[in-house]
Length: 591
Picture (spheres, rainbow, N blue to C red):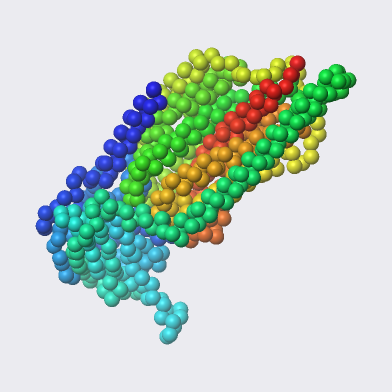
Protein backbone atom coordinates (compact mmCIF):
# COMPACT_ATOMS: atom_id res chain seq x y z
CA UNK A 1 0.00 0.00 0.00
CA UNK A 2 2.82 2.40 0.95
CA UNK A 3 4.64 1.62 -2.31
CA UNK A 4 1.57 2.39 -4.42
CA UNK A 5 1.03 5.67 -2.54
CA UNK A 6 4.68 6.59 -3.01
CA UNK A 7 4.46 5.93 -6.74
CA UNK A 8 1.24 7.98 -7.00
CA UNK A 9 2.93 10.97 -5.31
CA UNK A 10 5.95 10.47 -7.55
CA UNK A 11 3.90 10.35 -10.73
CA UNK A 12 2.11 13.55 -9.69
CA UNK A 13 5.45 15.25 -8.97
CA UNK A 14 6.87 14.28 -12.33
CA UNK A 15 3.75 15.25 -14.26
CA UNK A 16 3.81 18.62 -12.50
CA UNK A 17 7.44 19.10 -13.52
CA UNK A 18 6.68 18.04 -17.08
CA UNK A 19 3.69 20.39 -17.25
CA UNK A 20 5.75 23.25 -15.87
CA UNK A 21 8.50 22.67 -18.40
CA UNK A 22 6.26 22.36 -21.42
CA UNK A 23 3.60 24.93 -20.69
CA UNK A 24 5.94 27.91 -20.23
CA UNK A 25 3.18 29.77 -18.49
CA UNK A 26 0.85 29.85 -21.50
CA UNK A 27 -1.75 27.60 -23.10
CA UNK A 28 -0.08 27.95 -26.57
CA UNK A 29 -3.13 29.75 -28.06
CA UNK A 30 -2.48 33.05 -29.87
CA UNK A 31 -4.32 35.76 -31.77
CA UNK A 32 -2.96 37.52 -34.85
CA UNK A 33 0.12 39.67 -34.08
CA UNK A 34 0.47 38.22 -30.54
CA UNK A 35 4.12 37.93 -29.51
CA UNK A 36 5.04 34.22 -29.33
CA UNK A 37 7.96 33.59 -26.95
CA UNK A 38 11.27 32.94 -28.73
CA UNK A 39 14.17 32.04 -26.44
CA UNK A 40 17.82 31.69 -27.39
CA UNK A 41 19.18 28.75 -25.40
CA UNK A 42 22.82 27.92 -26.02
CA UNK A 43 25.70 27.68 -28.47
CA UNK A 44 28.54 25.18 -28.62
CA UNK A 45 30.77 22.93 -30.75
CA UNK A 46 28.55 20.45 -32.60
CA UNK A 47 30.73 17.42 -31.76
CA UNK A 48 31.01 18.28 -28.04
CA UNK A 49 27.47 18.01 -26.61
CA UNK A 50 28.50 18.77 -23.01
CA UNK A 51 30.46 21.90 -23.96
CA UNK A 52 27.71 24.49 -24.35
CA UNK A 53 27.75 28.22 -23.62
CA UNK A 54 25.15 30.92 -23.21
CA UNK A 55 23.92 32.35 -26.49
CA UNK A 56 25.26 35.83 -25.74
CA UNK A 57 28.69 34.53 -24.70
CA UNK A 58 29.31 34.98 -28.42
CA UNK A 59 29.13 38.67 -29.38
CA UNK A 60 25.69 38.55 -31.03
CA UNK A 61 23.73 41.78 -30.76
CA UNK A 62 20.88 41.60 -28.25
CA UNK A 63 18.40 44.09 -29.73
CA UNK A 64 17.37 45.51 -26.34
CA UNK A 65 17.00 44.19 -22.81
CA UNK A 66 17.81 40.49 -22.45
CA UNK A 67 15.34 38.73 -20.15
CA UNK A 68 16.19 35.39 -18.57
CA UNK A 69 13.48 32.71 -18.40
CA UNK A 70 12.83 31.08 -15.04
CA UNK A 71 13.84 27.44 -15.29
CA UNK A 72 12.89 24.22 -13.53
CA UNK A 73 15.51 22.07 -11.78
CA UNK A 74 15.75 19.60 -14.66
CA UNK A 75 16.35 22.37 -17.22
CA UNK A 76 19.25 23.78 -15.20
CA UNK A 77 20.76 20.28 -14.77
CA UNK A 78 20.43 19.83 -18.53
CA UNK A 79 22.55 22.94 -19.13
CA UNK A 80 19.66 25.03 -20.52
CA UNK A 81 19.95 28.81 -20.00
CA UNK A 82 17.07 30.41 -21.90
CA UNK A 83 17.11 34.17 -22.64
CA UNK A 84 14.97 36.34 -24.89
CA UNK A 85 16.21 36.29 -28.51
CA UNK A 86 16.63 39.42 -30.65
CA UNK A 87 14.16 38.13 -33.26
CA UNK A 88 10.47 39.06 -32.86
CA UNK A 89 8.14 36.47 -34.38
CA UNK A 90 4.54 37.62 -33.91
CA UNK A 91 1.77 35.13 -34.64
CA UNK A 92 0.86 35.00 -38.37
CA UNK A 93 2.82 38.17 -39.12
CA UNK A 94 5.12 37.75 -42.12
CA UNK A 95 8.38 39.68 -42.41
CA UNK A 96 10.89 40.12 -45.21
CA UNK A 97 14.57 40.78 -44.42
CA UNK A 98 13.74 42.72 -41.28
CA UNK A 99 16.69 43.98 -39.22
CA UNK A 100 16.69 42.40 -35.76
CA UNK A 101 19.62 44.49 -34.57
CA UNK A 102 22.84 46.04 -35.79
CA UNK A 103 26.32 45.81 -34.33
CA UNK A 104 29.81 46.92 -35.19
CA UNK A 105 31.96 43.85 -34.67
CA UNK A 106 35.36 44.71 -33.19
CA UNK A 107 38.53 42.78 -34.11
CA UNK A 108 38.11 40.77 -30.89
CA UNK A 109 34.49 39.94 -31.81
CA UNK A 110 35.54 38.79 -35.28
CA UNK A 111 38.30 36.61 -33.80
CA UNK A 112 35.82 35.10 -31.32
CA UNK A 113 33.29 34.32 -34.05
CA UNK A 114 36.02 32.88 -36.30
CA UNK A 115 37.16 30.51 -33.53
CA UNK A 116 33.52 29.43 -33.01
CA UNK A 117 32.96 28.79 -36.75
CA UNK A 118 36.22 26.77 -36.84
CA UNK A 119 34.80 24.49 -34.13
CA UNK A 120 31.43 24.01 -35.93
CA UNK A 121 29.39 25.97 -33.40
CA UNK A 122 25.63 25.56 -33.58
CA UNK A 123 22.88 27.58 -31.90
CA UNK A 124 19.71 26.29 -30.27
CA UNK A 125 16.53 28.29 -29.71
CA UNK A 126 12.99 27.48 -28.56
CA UNK A 127 9.93 29.01 -30.21
CA UNK A 128 6.72 28.24 -28.31
CA UNK A 129 8.69 25.31 -26.80
CA UNK A 130 9.60 23.92 -30.24
CA UNK A 131 13.35 23.48 -30.80
CA UNK A 132 15.27 25.30 -33.55
CA UNK A 133 18.82 24.36 -34.54
CA UNK A 134 21.30 25.89 -36.94
CA UNK A 135 24.99 26.52 -37.52
CA UNK A 136 26.32 30.02 -36.84
CA UNK A 137 28.67 30.09 -39.84
CA UNK A 138 30.56 28.11 -42.48
CA UNK A 139 34.10 27.27 -43.57
CA UNK A 140 34.93 27.46 -47.31
CA UNK A 141 38.06 25.93 -48.80
CA UNK A 142 39.04 27.30 -52.20
CA UNK A 143 40.34 24.11 -53.80
CA UNK A 144 40.85 25.58 -57.27
CA UNK A 145 43.14 28.50 -56.46
CA UNK A 146 44.84 27.52 -53.20
CA UNK A 147 43.87 24.41 -51.15
CA UNK A 148 45.45 25.88 -48.00
CA UNK A 149 43.37 29.06 -48.21
CA UNK A 150 40.34 28.89 -45.92
CA UNK A 151 37.52 31.41 -45.72
CA UNK A 152 35.42 31.77 -42.54
CA UNK A 153 31.94 33.31 -42.75
CA UNK A 154 29.26 34.20 -40.17
CA UNK A 155 25.61 33.84 -41.17
CA UNK A 156 23.71 37.07 -40.57
CA UNK A 157 20.31 36.17 -42.04
CA UNK A 158 17.86 33.54 -40.73
CA UNK A 159 14.76 32.42 -42.63
CA UNK A 160 11.97 31.14 -40.32
CA UNK A 161 9.28 28.88 -41.81
CA UNK A 162 6.38 28.41 -39.39
CA UNK A 163 3.33 26.15 -39.68
CA UNK A 164 0.15 26.93 -37.72
CA UNK A 165 -3.22 25.29 -37.16
CA UNK A 166 -5.93 27.86 -36.30
CA UNK A 167 -4.60 29.63 -33.18
CA UNK A 168 -1.63 27.35 -32.40
CA UNK A 169 1.97 27.03 -33.59
CA UNK A 170 2.63 23.51 -34.93
CA UNK A 171 6.09 23.49 -36.48
CA UNK A 172 9.06 25.76 -37.08
CA UNK A 173 12.24 25.43 -39.10
CA UNK A 174 15.13 27.88 -39.43
CA UNK A 175 17.43 28.14 -42.43
CA UNK A 176 20.50 30.32 -42.65
CA UNK A 177 21.21 32.15 -45.91
CA UNK A 178 24.67 31.15 -47.28
CA UNK A 179 24.73 34.26 -49.49
CA UNK A 180 24.19 36.70 -46.61
CA UNK A 181 27.39 36.41 -44.56
CA UNK A 182 30.08 38.41 -42.77
CA UNK A 183 33.69 37.60 -43.73
CA UNK A 184 35.63 36.55 -40.62
CA UNK A 185 38.87 35.48 -42.32
CA UNK A 186 40.83 38.59 -41.29
CA UNK A 187 40.87 40.50 -38.01
CA UNK A 188 39.12 43.68 -39.12
CA UNK A 189 36.06 45.53 -37.86
CA UNK A 190 32.75 44.88 -39.58
CA UNK A 191 29.39 46.69 -39.49
CA UNK A 192 26.76 43.96 -39.38
CA UNK A 193 22.98 43.94 -39.65
CA UNK A 194 21.44 40.72 -38.31
CA UNK A 195 18.29 40.22 -40.40
CA UNK A 196 15.49 37.65 -40.57
CA UNK A 197 12.55 36.62 -42.73
CA UNK A 198 9.34 35.02 -41.41
CA UNK A 199 6.88 32.98 -43.52
CA UNK A 200 3.64 31.46 -42.16
CA UNK A 201 1.76 28.50 -43.65
CA UNK A 202 -1.39 26.70 -42.50
CA UNK A 203 -1.34 22.95 -41.75
CA UNK A 204 -3.85 20.25 -40.76
CA UNK A 205 -1.52 18.66 -38.15
CA UNK A 206 -3.28 18.80 -34.75
CA UNK A 207 -1.52 20.50 -31.82
CA UNK A 208 -1.35 17.20 -29.86
CA UNK A 209 0.83 15.64 -32.59
CA UNK A 210 3.24 18.51 -33.11
CA UNK A 211 6.10 16.71 -31.27
CA UNK A 212 5.66 13.51 -33.33
CA UNK A 213 8.12 14.56 -36.02
CA UNK A 214 10.94 14.55 -33.45
CA UNK A 215 10.10 11.10 -32.09
CA UNK A 216 9.59 9.55 -35.55
CA UNK A 217 13.26 9.98 -36.50
CA UNK A 218 14.27 7.02 -34.30
CA UNK A 219 11.31 4.91 -35.48
CA UNK A 220 12.24 4.82 -39.18
CA UNK A 221 12.01 1.33 -40.74
CA UNK A 222 15.80 1.14 -41.23
CA UNK A 223 16.44 1.90 -37.55
CA UNK A 224 13.69 -0.43 -36.34
CA UNK A 225 15.20 -3.29 -38.36
CA UNK A 226 18.50 -2.87 -36.53
CA UNK A 227 16.73 -2.66 -33.15
CA UNK A 228 14.73 -5.82 -33.81
CA UNK A 229 17.84 -7.62 -35.06
CA UNK A 230 19.48 -6.66 -31.76
CA UNK A 231 16.54 -8.07 -29.78
CA UNK A 232 16.43 -11.34 -31.79
CA UNK A 233 20.18 -11.72 -31.29
CA UNK A 234 19.71 -11.20 -27.55
CA UNK A 235 16.77 -13.63 -27.38
CA UNK A 236 18.86 -16.36 -29.04
CA UNK A 237 21.53 -15.74 -26.40
CA UNK A 238 18.92 -16.06 -23.65
CA UNK A 239 17.53 -19.32 -25.13
CA UNK A 240 21.01 -20.83 -25.42
CA UNK A 241 21.77 -19.85 -21.82
CA UNK A 242 18.46 -21.25 -20.61
CA UNK A 243 19.28 -24.57 -22.26
CA UNK A 244 22.78 -24.42 -20.79
CA UNK A 245 21.39 -23.79 -17.30
CA UNK A 246 18.73 -26.50 -17.64
CA UNK A 247 21.47 -28.97 -18.62
CA UNK A 248 23.46 -28.02 -15.52
CA UNK A 249 20.45 -28.41 -13.22
CA UNK A 250 19.63 -31.79 -14.77
CA UNK A 251 23.23 -32.84 -14.23
CA UNK A 252 23.02 -31.68 -10.60
CA UNK A 253 19.83 -33.66 -10.01
CA UNK A 254 21.25 -36.72 -11.79
CA UNK A 255 24.36 -36.58 -9.61
CA UNK A 256 22.15 -36.24 -6.52
CA UNK A 257 20.17 -39.37 -7.40
CA UNK A 258 23.39 -41.29 -8.02
CA UNK A 259 24.78 -40.11 -4.67
CA UNK A 260 21.61 -41.14 -2.83
CA UNK A 261 21.75 -44.59 -4.49
CA UNK A 262 25.41 -44.98 -3.54
CA UNK A 263 24.72 -43.76 0.00
CA UNK A 264 22.07 -46.39 0.43
CA UNK A 265 24.40 -49.13 -0.85
CA UNK A 266 27.78 -48.09 0.55
CA UNK A 267 26.75 -45.99 3.61
CA UNK A 268 29.85 -44.13 4.87
CA UNK A 269 32.46 -45.97 2.84
CA UNK A 270 32.55 -43.34 0.10
CA UNK A 271 33.73 -39.81 0.73
CA UNK A 272 31.60 -36.95 -0.56
CA UNK A 273 33.03 -34.87 -3.41
CA UNK A 274 32.03 -31.79 -5.38
CA UNK A 275 29.57 -29.21 -4.12
CA UNK A 276 27.98 -31.57 -1.57
CA UNK A 277 31.35 -31.86 0.14
CA UNK A 278 31.36 -28.15 1.16
CA UNK A 279 27.82 -27.97 2.57
CA UNK A 280 29.27 -26.95 5.95
CA UNK A 281 31.02 -23.87 4.45
CA UNK A 282 28.77 -22.68 1.64
CA UNK A 283 26.63 -20.50 3.94
CA UNK A 284 29.58 -19.08 5.88
CA UNK A 285 29.07 -15.30 5.87
CA UNK A 286 31.37 -13.30 3.54
CA UNK A 287 34.26 -11.08 4.56
CA UNK A 288 33.59 -7.33 4.74
CA UNK A 289 29.89 -7.99 5.35
CA UNK A 290 29.12 -4.29 5.95
CA UNK A 291 30.39 -3.28 2.47
CA UNK A 292 28.60 -6.28 0.96
CA UNK A 293 25.25 -5.36 2.54
CA UNK A 294 25.70 -1.68 1.54
CA UNK A 295 26.43 -2.70 -2.07
CA UNK A 296 23.26 -4.84 -2.10
CA UNK A 297 21.21 -1.95 -0.69
CA UNK A 298 22.55 0.55 -3.24
CA UNK A 299 22.08 -1.96 -6.07
CA UNK A 300 18.45 -2.57 -5.05
CA UNK A 301 17.78 1.20 -4.94
CA UNK A 302 19.29 1.74 -8.40
CA UNK A 303 17.27 -1.22 -9.75
CA UNK A 304 14.05 0.33 -8.36
CA UNK A 305 15.04 3.72 -9.81
CA UNK A 306 15.55 2.15 -13.26
CA UNK A 307 12.15 0.40 -13.15
CA UNK A 308 10.37 3.67 -12.20
CA UNK A 309 12.17 5.57 -14.97
CA UNK A 310 11.06 2.93 -17.48
CA UNK A 311 7.46 3.20 -16.23
CA UNK A 312 7.47 6.97 -16.77
CA UNK A 313 9.14 6.58 -20.17
CA UNK A 314 6.59 4.01 -21.32
CA UNK A 315 3.64 6.28 -20.38
CA UNK A 316 5.19 9.09 -22.44
CA UNK A 317 6.63 11.54 -19.90
CA UNK A 318 10.02 11.82 -21.63
CA UNK A 319 8.91 13.01 -25.06
CA UNK A 320 11.63 14.69 -27.16
CA UNK A 321 12.72 18.14 -26.01
CA UNK A 322 10.71 17.96 -22.78
CA UNK A 323 13.60 19.89 -21.33
CA UNK A 324 15.09 18.39 -18.20
CA UNK A 325 12.19 16.01 -17.39
CA UNK A 326 14.56 13.03 -17.20
CA UNK A 327 16.98 14.84 -14.85
CA UNK A 328 14.12 15.98 -12.61
CA UNK A 329 12.76 12.42 -12.50
CA UNK A 330 16.19 10.97 -11.66
CA UNK A 331 16.76 13.39 -8.76
CA UNK A 332 13.23 13.03 -7.31
CA UNK A 333 13.00 9.22 -7.66
CA UNK A 334 16.52 8.67 -6.31
CA UNK A 335 15.61 10.75 -3.25
CA UNK A 336 12.31 8.89 -2.71
CA UNK A 337 13.82 5.39 -3.12
CA UNK A 338 16.65 5.86 -0.61
CA UNK A 339 14.46 4.16 2.04
CA UNK A 340 14.68 0.96 -0.04
CA UNK A 341 18.49 1.10 0.11
CA UNK A 342 18.43 1.65 3.89
CA UNK A 343 15.97 -1.18 4.52
CA UNK A 344 17.66 -3.74 2.24
CA UNK A 345 21.20 -3.02 3.45
CA UNK A 346 20.43 -2.98 7.19
CA UNK A 347 18.08 -5.98 7.08
CA UNK A 348 20.68 -8.06 5.24
CA UNK A 349 23.51 -6.80 7.46
CA UNK A 350 21.55 -7.87 10.56
CA UNK A 351 20.87 -11.26 8.94
CA UNK A 352 24.64 -11.64 8.54
CA UNK A 353 24.89 -11.07 12.33
CA UNK A 354 26.42 -7.61 11.93
CA UNK A 355 26.34 -5.39 15.01
CA UNK A 356 27.30 -1.87 13.88
CA UNK A 357 24.19 -1.15 11.76
CA UNK A 358 24.58 2.65 12.01
CA UNK A 359 27.99 2.52 10.31
CA UNK A 360 26.48 0.20 7.69
CA UNK A 361 23.71 2.74 7.04
CA UNK A 362 26.24 5.57 6.57
CA UNK A 363 28.23 3.37 4.21
CA UNK A 364 25.05 2.62 2.20
CA UNK A 365 24.28 6.35 1.91
CA UNK A 366 27.79 7.14 0.65
CA UNK A 367 28.56 4.08 -1.51
CA UNK A 368 27.03 5.51 -4.70
CA UNK A 369 26.47 9.16 -3.72
CA UNK A 370 30.10 9.61 -2.54
CA UNK A 371 31.84 8.88 -5.88
CA UNK A 372 29.05 10.72 -7.73
CA UNK A 373 29.50 13.82 -5.53
CA UNK A 374 33.31 13.82 -5.96
CA UNK A 375 32.95 13.42 -9.75
CA UNK A 376 30.38 16.23 -9.83
CA UNK A 377 32.66 18.57 -7.81
CA UNK A 378 35.56 18.02 -10.22
CA UNK A 379 33.46 18.34 -13.39
CA UNK A 380 31.56 21.37 -12.10
CA UNK A 381 34.91 23.07 -11.40
CA UNK A 382 36.00 22.28 -14.98
CA UNK A 383 32.70 23.70 -16.33
CA UNK A 384 33.14 26.88 -14.23
CA UNK A 385 36.69 27.28 -15.59
CA UNK A 386 35.28 27.00 -19.14
CA UNK A 387 32.29 29.30 -18.27
CA UNK A 388 30.04 26.60 -19.74
CA UNK A 389 26.31 26.21 -19.06
CA UNK A 390 27.03 22.76 -17.59
CA UNK A 391 28.29 24.60 -14.47
CA UNK A 392 25.42 24.53 -11.97
CA UNK A 393 24.48 27.84 -10.32
CA UNK A 394 24.93 28.06 -6.53
CA UNK A 395 21.15 28.10 -5.99
CA UNK A 396 20.69 24.78 -7.82
CA UNK A 397 23.47 23.15 -5.79
CA UNK A 398 21.73 24.36 -2.60
CA UNK A 399 18.42 22.83 -3.82
CA UNK A 400 20.09 19.45 -4.48
CA UNK A 401 21.84 19.53 -1.08
CA UNK A 402 18.50 20.34 0.59
CA UNK A 403 16.79 17.42 -1.23
CA UNK A 404 19.61 15.14 -0.04
CA UNK A 405 19.42 16.46 3.54
CA UNK A 406 15.64 16.72 3.97
CA UNK A 407 14.40 13.78 1.83
CA UNK A 408 17.15 11.28 0.99
CA UNK A 409 18.86 11.07 4.40
CA UNK A 410 15.68 10.83 6.58
CA UNK A 411 14.20 8.14 4.29
CA UNK A 412 17.52 6.24 4.37
CA UNK A 413 17.50 6.32 8.21
CA UNK A 414 13.81 5.30 8.39
CA UNK A 415 14.49 2.42 6.00
CA UNK A 416 17.49 1.40 8.11
CA UNK A 417 15.46 1.39 11.34
CA UNK A 418 12.72 -0.68 9.65
CA UNK A 419 15.37 -3.12 8.38
CA UNK A 420 16.96 -3.46 11.82
CA UNK A 421 13.57 -4.16 13.40
CA UNK A 422 12.57 -6.71 10.75
CA UNK A 423 14.26 -9.44 12.91
CA UNK A 424 14.47 -11.79 9.92
CA UNK A 425 17.03 -14.59 10.17
CA UNK A 426 19.23 -15.76 7.33
CA UNK A 427 17.65 -18.87 5.77
CA UNK A 428 20.43 -21.47 5.43
CA UNK A 429 19.39 -25.06 4.63
CA UNK A 430 22.69 -26.41 6.03
CA UNK A 431 24.50 -25.85 9.33
CA UNK A 432 27.83 -24.02 9.02
CA UNK A 433 30.87 -25.74 10.55
CA UNK A 434 33.01 -23.97 13.17
CA UNK A 435 36.19 -23.84 11.09
CA UNK A 436 36.35 -23.08 7.33
CA UNK A 437 37.46 -25.85 5.01
CA UNK A 438 40.58 -25.20 2.97
CA UNK A 439 39.96 -24.42 -0.70
CA UNK A 440 41.94 -26.77 -3.01
CA UNK A 441 44.40 -25.22 -5.51
CA UNK A 442 42.51 -24.10 -8.61
CA UNK A 443 43.67 -23.36 -12.19
CA UNK A 444 44.14 -19.68 -13.19
CA UNK A 445 40.89 -19.50 -15.16
CA UNK A 446 38.96 -20.22 -11.96
CA UNK A 447 40.24 -16.93 -10.48
CA UNK A 448 38.02 -13.90 -9.86
CA UNK A 449 39.17 -11.76 -12.84
CA UNK A 450 38.89 -14.48 -15.55
CA UNK A 451 35.46 -15.44 -14.17
CA UNK A 452 34.36 -11.76 -14.24
CA UNK A 453 35.51 -11.49 -17.87
CA UNK A 454 33.46 -14.59 -18.76
CA UNK A 455 30.43 -13.36 -16.81
CA UNK A 456 30.38 -9.85 -18.28
CA UNK A 457 30.87 -10.77 -21.93
CA UNK A 458 27.51 -12.49 -22.59
CA UNK A 459 25.23 -9.84 -21.01
CA UNK A 460 27.24 -7.13 -22.78
CA UNK A 461 26.90 -8.90 -26.14
CA UNK A 462 23.13 -8.90 -25.61
CA UNK A 463 22.98 -5.08 -25.28
CA UNK A 464 25.88 -3.62 -27.25
CA UNK A 465 23.89 -2.84 -30.44
CA UNK A 466 21.36 -0.85 -28.42
CA UNK A 467 24.20 0.86 -26.53
CA UNK A 468 25.31 2.69 -29.69
CA UNK A 469 21.90 4.36 -30.09
CA UNK A 470 21.77 5.36 -26.43
CA UNK A 471 25.30 6.84 -26.61
CA UNK A 472 24.42 8.70 -29.83
CA UNK A 473 21.42 10.18 -28.00
CA UNK A 474 23.11 11.05 -24.69
CA UNK A 475 26.47 12.12 -26.17
CA UNK A 476 25.23 13.36 -29.51
CA UNK A 477 22.23 14.95 -31.17
CA UNK A 478 20.15 11.88 -32.05
CA UNK A 479 16.74 11.44 -30.46
CA UNK A 480 15.94 8.15 -28.72
CA UNK A 481 12.27 7.39 -28.16
CA UNK A 482 11.85 3.61 -28.59
CA UNK A 483 11.58 2.95 -24.86
CA UNK A 484 9.59 -0.27 -25.35
CA UNK A 485 12.51 -1.89 -27.20
CA UNK A 486 14.93 -0.55 -24.60
CA UNK A 487 12.81 -2.08 -21.83
CA UNK A 488 12.85 -5.49 -23.57
CA UNK A 489 16.65 -5.24 -23.89
CA UNK A 490 16.86 -4.36 -20.17
CA UNK A 491 14.79 -7.44 -19.22
CA UNK A 492 17.05 -9.61 -21.42
CA UNK A 493 20.10 -8.07 -19.71
CA UNK A 494 18.72 -9.02 -16.28
CA UNK A 495 17.90 -12.59 -17.34
CA UNK A 496 21.31 -13.20 -18.98
CA UNK A 497 23.13 -11.70 -15.96
CA UNK A 498 21.18 -13.93 -13.55
CA UNK A 499 21.71 -17.09 -15.67
CA UNK A 500 25.43 -16.63 -16.27
CA UNK A 501 26.05 -15.87 -12.58
CA UNK A 502 24.14 -19.00 -11.52
CA UNK A 503 26.12 -21.13 -14.02
CA UNK A 504 29.49 -19.78 -12.83
CA UNK A 505 28.47 -20.18 -9.17
CA UNK A 506 27.66 -23.84 -9.81
CA UNK A 507 31.07 -24.44 -11.42
CA UNK A 508 32.75 -22.65 -8.50
CA UNK A 509 30.97 -24.82 -5.91
CA UNK A 510 31.67 -27.99 -7.95
CA UNK A 511 35.38 -27.11 -7.70
CA UNK A 512 34.90 -27.06 -3.86
CA UNK A 513 35.43 -23.27 -3.68
CA UNK A 514 32.89 -22.06 -1.12
CA UNK A 515 33.68 -18.30 -1.28
CA UNK A 516 30.87 -17.56 -3.75
CA UNK A 517 29.24 -14.51 -2.12
CA UNK A 518 31.53 -11.76 -3.38
CA UNK A 519 32.30 -13.73 -6.55
CA UNK A 520 28.64 -13.84 -7.60
CA UNK A 521 28.27 -10.07 -6.96
CA UNK A 522 31.44 -9.22 -8.92
CA UNK A 523 30.51 -11.56 -11.79
CA UNK A 524 27.01 -10.07 -12.01
CA UNK A 525 28.34 -6.50 -11.98
CA UNK A 526 31.18 -7.09 -14.43
CA UNK A 527 28.95 -5.98 -17.34
CA UNK A 528 29.42 -2.43 -15.98
CA UNK A 529 33.17 -2.74 -16.68
CA UNK A 530 32.45 -3.93 -20.23
CA UNK A 531 30.19 -0.90 -20.79
CA UNK A 532 33.03 1.37 -19.61
CA UNK A 533 35.42 -0.37 -22.01
CA UNK A 534 32.82 0.32 -24.75
CA UNK A 535 33.02 4.02 -23.75
CA UNK A 536 36.69 4.05 -24.79
CA UNK A 537 35.81 2.45 -28.14
CA UNK A 538 32.89 4.86 -28.71
CA UNK A 539 34.95 7.95 -27.84
CA UNK A 540 37.86 7.16 -30.14
CA UNK A 541 36.15 5.25 -32.99
CA UNK A 542 32.52 6.43 -33.22
CA UNK A 543 32.52 10.07 -32.07
CA UNK A 544 34.34 13.31 -32.90
CA UNK A 545 34.45 14.59 -29.32
CA UNK A 546 37.57 16.50 -28.32
CA UNK A 547 38.93 18.91 -25.73
CA UNK A 548 39.58 18.52 -22.00
CA UNK A 549 36.12 19.54 -20.84
CA UNK A 550 34.19 17.16 -23.13
CA UNK A 551 36.62 14.29 -22.45
CA UNK A 552 36.41 14.73 -18.67
CA UNK A 553 32.59 15.00 -18.77
CA UNK A 554 32.25 11.91 -20.96
CA UNK A 555 34.58 9.64 -18.97
CA UNK A 556 33.62 11.14 -15.57
CA UNK A 557 29.86 10.75 -15.83
CA UNK A 558 30.10 7.45 -17.74
CA UNK A 559 32.26 6.11 -14.88
CA UNK A 560 29.41 6.97 -12.45
CA UNK A 561 26.77 5.37 -14.73
CA UNK A 562 28.87 2.20 -15.20
CA UNK A 563 29.49 2.04 -11.44
CA UNK A 564 25.70 2.24 -10.96
CA UNK A 565 25.27 -0.64 -13.44
CA UNK A 566 27.95 -2.59 -11.56
CA UNK A 567 26.05 -2.24 -8.26
CA UNK A 568 22.63 -2.96 -9.81
CA UNK A 569 23.65 -6.01 -11.87
CA UNK A 570 25.88 -7.25 -9.04
CA UNK A 571 22.79 -7.28 -6.82
CA UNK A 572 20.83 -9.18 -9.51
CA UNK A 573 23.66 -11.71 -9.91
CA UNK A 574 23.98 -12.33 -6.16
CA UNK A 575 20.21 -12.68 -5.61
CA UNK A 576 19.98 -15.24 -8.45
CA UNK A 577 23.00 -17.17 -7.11
CA UNK A 578 21.58 -17.15 -3.56
CA UNK A 579 18.25 -18.60 -4.79
CA UNK A 580 20.12 -21.29 -6.72
CA UNK A 581 22.47 -22.24 -3.86
CA UNK A 582 19.60 -22.43 -1.37
CA UNK A 583 17.61 -24.59 -3.80
CA UNK A 584 20.35 -27.18 -4.47
CA UNK A 585 21.36 -27.52 -0.81
CA UNK A 586 17.74 -27.83 0.24
CA UNK A 587 17.42 -30.84 -2.08
CA UNK A 588 20.10 -32.91 -0.27
CA UNK A 589 20.59 -34.18 3.26
CA UNK A 590 23.45 -32.22 4.78
CA UNK A 591 24.27 -33.49 8.24
